[in-house]
Image (cartoon, helix red, strand yellow):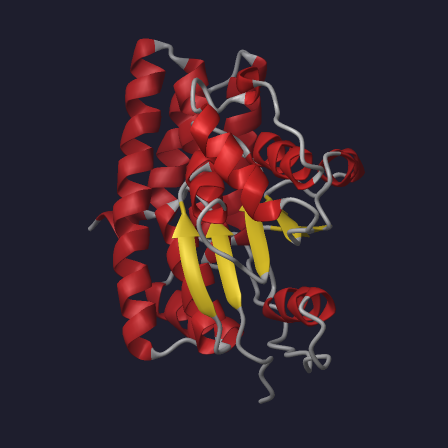
Length: 274
C-alpha cells in the first residue's frame, strides 16, 4: 500500500475516541500528529508551531472550528480580530498568531458530522479549504491529504460496504474486524480504541439518562451528538441514525419518547455496557 510523504498535521477534535482513531490512521500513514481539543488550543499551537495541514472539527466547546478559522484568516491578512470572536481577553495570543501566520495560508479541512450542502457552504464561507464528513472513509482522507499536501495521489482503499442491518445488539468481534480492515489498524490499536469507545458510550448513555430524568434537552442533545460520533467511527451506521434522531428531537424540543429511545440504544449497545 502506498503512503503519502510524512507531514505535520494539527488535528483539532474534542471527542477523545475520534482523536484516537484519526491519530492512529494518520500516524500509520507516516504523518506526525499534534492534537488540540478545541479552537483555543488550536490557535495556541498555530501561534508557536508550523503545520502542513489542519483537520478542524466544526462543533467544539470553548471555541468552535468556524470561529477559529475566521480568526486564523484574519491574522493571515495581518489584522487582529475582535476579542468578541471568542478569544476572551487574550490579545497576546492573537498578536502571536498574527505574527506567525501573516502573509501565509494555513490549509484547513473541516470535519463535521453533517453532510448537508448548507453546512459545506458555511465551512467554505469562513475560509476553510475543504470539507470532510465524519465518520470519514480512509480513501476520502487520503485523497484530501494528497490534494492539499501536494504529494503524489494516494491509491484508494476499497474495504467494501459493511452490512449494518437492524440487529438485537452490536457484535464486538465484527466491530474489531471492521476497524482493522477499514482503517488498517493494528490489533493493539483496535483494542485500545474499543476500550475508549466502551467508556465513551457508557458515559454518554448515562448523560442521556440523567438528562431525560431532569428534562434537560440541551444536555441530552449534546450527549446524543457525542454518542453519534463514537458509534459512527465504529461503523455502526444504524446506531448512528438512532443517536442522530435523539439529538435532533432534543434540539427541537420535540415531544418524543426519549426514555423508549434510550432503552433501545442501551439494548443495541449492551455488549459495550457489560
